[in-house]
Each structure stands twice: as C-alpha cells, then as structure tokens.
Image (tube, rainbow, N blue to C red; front, side):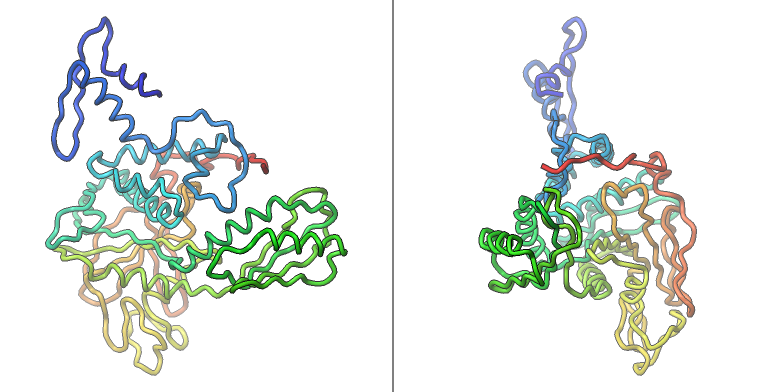
Length: 415
C-alpha cells in the first residue's frame, strides 16, 4: 500500500470526515482535515516491518548478506510466508514499544536480528497462550527487563538473551562472508575445489591476489593442496573429484575451530542474572545459534556444571567430583535461586519458527516454587542416566500455522 493509499484511509465514502486516532507514548492524538491523512500514513509507516515491494529477485542469499536484507528483497512464496508471519507478530507489539525492536530486526548485523527475533518470538508465544505480556515493565532502578508475564495464576519477569557467538566471532564471520562471496564469482570450468578455513585474520583479505593464485593453480592441474596465508588468514584448497561444468568453483568448505557452547550459555546467563532489581522471579530465555550446533548436553553442563561421571542433579557434589561449576550448582551450594527457570532454544530462525521446540529447565534446589509455564515449553528432566525431554504442544499449533509451514523449500537461483 502506497502512502497515498494510506492517506485515503482518512477519507470515507461520500467524502465524510473520519477522525484518525493513534496511541503514541500513552497519548491519544486526534486529527482532522490535513492531520487525518498524515496520521493514517504515519500508522502504516510505524507498523511496516518490510518494504512494500514490488519484488522480482529470486537469487540465493549472498554470503555477505544479512538475514533481514535477504528476507526483504526476495520474491519467493516461501520467503513471503516468513515476511507475512513476522509482520503479523510485529503488529501485536504496542506502537509505543516497537521502535527499538523494529530497528534491530532491520539491522544488517545478524546478531542483532537474531536477538530481536527471539524477543518477537517469545512475545508472540506467550501472547498467543493467553498470558498478559508487558514490554519493559517499570521496576526499581533504571534498567528494565524485557517482559513481565502474568496469567494462569503466575507472575514473573522474562529476559531474552542471545548466546552462541562473541564479538570476535561476528567480526570473523563478516570478514569471511566478503571473501566467500568474492570467490563465488570464480567458476570451475573443469573441476571444483574444497576450501578449509583454518583462521580468519584481523583485516580484510586481498581477494584479488587469492583469485589470481587459484587461477594459476587450476591451470597447472590443481595438484596437491594450495595453502594461502596472509596477515593471520590461513586457508587451504584441494581439488574435488567432481567436474566443474562452469558452476561455482567452491564445492565444499570446512571451518576450523572449537565450539564451547556451554561456556557461552553460562556467560549469557551471567550477563543478566543480577542486572535488575525485581519484585518477583526472573526467567532467562537463552537463544544459542552456533555453526556446529548446540545440544541439550551443552545446556545441562552450563546449568549444572561439569562433573566426573553422571550424578543426580539434586545432589551437591564435592569439589573432587565437580570439575566446573554451573549456573545453578556450585561446589557444595546452590546458586541463583531468584532465577528458578531457564528457557533454551537452539538453531531457531524465522523459517524454523513452527518446528523448533524451546526447552524449559527448572532448578532442583529444594524449597523453590517455579512459575507456571505454558504447554509449548518442553520440560527437561535431568537424571543420573541422562537428559529426557517431555512432551509439549507443537509450536505450529501455538502460532496457528500449517504443520509444514512455511511450505516447500524456495527455488532460488544463483546470480
């Protein structure tokens, strides 16, 4: 809808005058004549999350392209379903609270986008379950948590946080994305190669020199590995036993490194545990999206610590058996009783909103009464034999979506 069309919303049939009301920062602004058209147009601008189009681009996501930029430009029914869902959810966020969330969702920084989407996801899930959700409720002090959740005989504060990548990870990912996109333009006329990334340097790589070295190596028959090192960058290339056929040169890639998701989850929890002065329990919701993948054992280790052999989490191990403390269980004592529950989601993105099953972890500390939670959260039971997830309401039912949402995989082409 164009701004002109939005402005016409202020004019009724037969030219009768319509007063447009808009709630902004708790005030009701009433307009007539010129003001009515301006307010109608402004309402549309405030609630729009994606551009209005038209869209004709059906190429794959670039390696150096952010999630929002890709979702906003792509003309494919699969992606359109995602845009429609996010727009509907965003429309349920009060106007007085949506500016910051909107800015982060539209960010070119994927870390900002993922964190904002996690907040939008939680807001919609609790809202759809019949809970009252207050965004940034007033509390003692100057800092406010993300949500106050009330309903079903319970009341608690909810704070969303994203784990899984550090500032160094984000920096390296951006630099690597530029290199990977530049190499996408190199065609494998006679063969394809695999690329191994051993390390990413502190500065952008001189891609022109690398492409030249690859061309010489390919023309010489691509014998053995081609190592490439420059200012902290270490890459390796090997020929694959596959014909090139004029497609992209890079047929496979391997990223080196070691993932310690438990440590990153613990750091995310620690960053929020004592941030606010609250008059009720705090539940922290952690999103962990990592390249290798976070599993339930990573979350268990973050919450209960690393011990020698499996033990019941209701027991407090002695120093000799606990090799690393957890968020809730220390060396002979319980911790953070004012955070009785942690919600954890792994590998959550807008296109997996109907499929990912968020986990609910509850402290086993005696005497703690945790908040009542909705049925879409998978209750986790930790025993001496392992971690066992319980049953939960499917998220596609919570969000009133088809089970196979968002539909068939997109048919995107390479540029």
